[in-house]
Image (cartoon, rainbow, N blue to C red):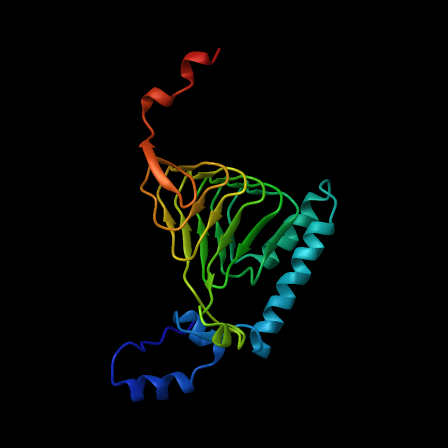
Length: 215
């Protein structure tokens, strides 16, 4: 990734610099870019789509083949990671998954910007992580403009089923997000958040331990 500073200088200088960038470079620098019609980005999405199709079409018992496909698809894949089909993403190489994490069926990681999952993250079924945002003006939206902000799940985060994570969100270590929540802003570590938009209802404490029920 080639990082380019475009935030300094006059408006004309910034626009002149933007004209020299590819759409992918604009994306990587958090700028508005052509997501729909740029040939380079279309080709990269087609490659990821083909790898997702191959993974989702491979029987579960063919573990080595499934692992090989994921290694080609994802930017970083830790040890003892389980991903259940169906699994979808846009580019793949923007996704990093830490050791021991688990992703249930029908996850969609829209990784226009980086999506990072820490160690031992549990992702419930039908979860979506969406890094892309579109213009509010229809005319601009129809031209394919888009910008993207990354998503981070720190270690030991648990997302219940049907959770949606929106662009730019960071979820702190050990946080739990209730089923069906739509997370629009950062969540503090060791918090329980629920609802749409998600809000923190309380902190996780030793009182939540199940040790007294264990034999």
